[in-house]
Structure formats: structure tokens, C-alpha cells
Image 1 (cartoon, rainbow, N blue to C red):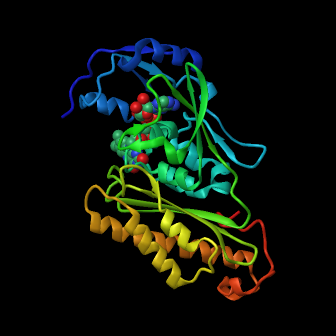
Image 2 (tube, helix red, strand yellow):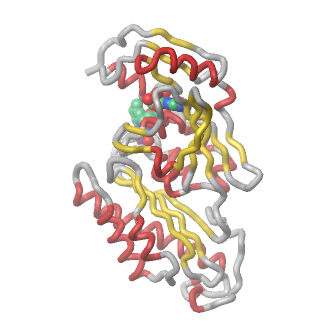
Length: 318
Ligand SMILES: Cc1cc2nc3c(=O)[nH]c(=O)nc-3n(C[C@H](O)[C@H](O)[C@H](O)COP(=O)(O)OP(=O)(O)OC[C@H]3O[C@@H](n4cnc5c(N)ncnc54)[C@H](O)[C@@H]3O)c2cc1C
């Protein structure tokens, strides 16, 4: 049930340091607010009742999206979902993140909601965390005693819980460069309307070795466990192997077994299996075809040691 907001003081610090000072001063009574699409609703529902809101929306130092010298990406927490989805840099180098960002809520939510808010909320069904987990992103946090960097895979500790301290601000999301001959995708089901939660989301990165075997695979899963999570056993089954439909099917089944859904477990597990199988097959076929174009479909790539390789595969491949 929605009610009027309880009274609170609204602070607009001019720097991140000033924001941290306010968080230190007001402790648990304070909350950072970015786009407010999530926090304000929680306040209306009386799930949260902060008496001090520390706004960061005006902090331009947290609003950036740029390539790093090493070829990765730095994203400020204030970048909105719409800006991430429309960024040519994201579309070219990490299209799976553009897809996930474009999947968040409605246009209004995407125009106000930020990637930082999405990550910090840490709801099990958020769309960007499984992608950031698969991309092995790192989060930079600033607190009163300085900065620390936390791998995305360690950031969320449970539903709506993170390692972020009450006096810390997320200041950067860093996505490392993907290796050559890699590609990624995000697949999800099933939103009947744009405001429905994702029931299962699977983010996959596949990296081919020069000989066509699977050098690496990362499977990030959302909405099927208390937090976004990886499927280490399924990944281990594929790493170093020559991929084929049967092996991919087995690994997808294993990934389904690695999730811990809160509700509708059979359906969610089935969807994880289907989405994982689809994602890996699509990426493997696409990469094989662009890396070993002489081999129809690239399917025999693994038996062509020293076959032609290309480091700039297209269609989301790198
Ligand atoms: C109708 C509707 C549909 C939605 N659909 C989706 C969806 O499909 N997929 C999805 O993933 N989400 C969805 N959401 C959830 C939400 O809008 C997103 O999670 C959004 O990205 C939150 O960003 P924000 O900037 O509005 O965060 P805010 O509401 O400002 O903050 C959210 C939380 O993060 C904290 N926070 C924010 N930024 C920082 C920071 N830099 N440092 C420290 N703490 C910070 C806040 O204190 C708060 O606890 C939906 C919400 C609504 C209302």
C-alpha cells in the first residue's frame, strides 16, 4: 500500500567526499539517492524510512562512460539505463550490457534509473547484475577511510544486501576488456509487461582458443538465486573442451541444477537450461563462423588446429 512519504531532510553535496561525510554524520538514518526509482517506492511502502536523503544526482564526477587505455570500460554509477543502452561504446564492445539495460522497466524508469542504483539495490531479479557478473566487472567504493575495489561477484551477499557499508558510495563500475575471439549475450524470460520482474536471466560470455576449443566460458544467472550468481560447474565442463551440441546441452542442464530459485523452481530451472543452451550455441556458432570462416558453420573448427583466426569477430564478438 502506498502512503505519503515520511518527512526527511534532503542534502545535495557538491562532491563525493561531502556525500560520504554526510553518510558518516547521519549513519543508518541516511540513504544515498540516485534516480530514486527504487528508493522512493520503498519509502512510500514504508519498507525504508530514512530521515536524511543524500542526493548524488548532481555529482557530475559520477556521470561518465568511457573506454580505458587497456580497452575496458569505466561506467559512472549515475549513467542511466537509457544512456547505457544507447551508448555506441557499450553497443560495440559489450552489447550484452546494452541489451540488459534496455530491458529494465519502462522508458521512464530507464531514463531516471541508474546502473549504480540497479547494482546497489541488489534485488535477485535485477537485470544488469548477471551481465556484470559474467563480464567480471569490478566496483569502486568510496568511504571515509578511502577507496576499495570489490569484484561484482562478491558485491551482492543476499537479496537486497551488499558489502556496501552505510557510509560508502559506489563511484565506478569497471568492465575489463574481453579477450580476442570472445562474444557475449544476455537472454531472459518472461516479462508479460515491462514492469514485470525477469523470471530468469542468463548472461553468457564465450571465448574461443586459437584451435577452436573453448578457452573460457562465464555463465551469469539472475532471478534464480538470492543474488546474481555464476554456474561454476557448468563452466568447468566446457572450459578447454571442443564444444558440440551434446556437451552444450549437458552443461546447460548442469547450470539449471546450480540455481537456487526462491519460487517456481521447476519453471525457472527449465528456463535456465533453455536460455543457457541457446546462448552458448549462438555464441559458439557465431564465433566459429567468424574465426574460422573457411569452415561452413565453423562447426569443425576444433579439428582445424592452426586454422585461420580473426581477432575482431563481429556481432558482439571481439
Ligand atoms: C516500474 C518499475 C519497473 C522496474 N523494472 C525493472 C527491471 O525490469 N529490471 C531491473 O533490474 N530493475 C527494475 N526496476 C528497479 C529500479 O528502477 C532499478 O533498479 C534502478 O536501476 C534503480 O536505480 P536508481 O538510480 O533509481 O536507484 P535509487 O532508487 O536512487 O537507489 C536504489 C538503491 O541504491 C542505492 N544507491 C544508488 N546509487 C548508489 C551509489 N552510487 N552508491 C551507493 N548507493 C547507491 C540507494 O541508496 C538505494 O538503496 C524497476 C522499478 C520500477 C519502479
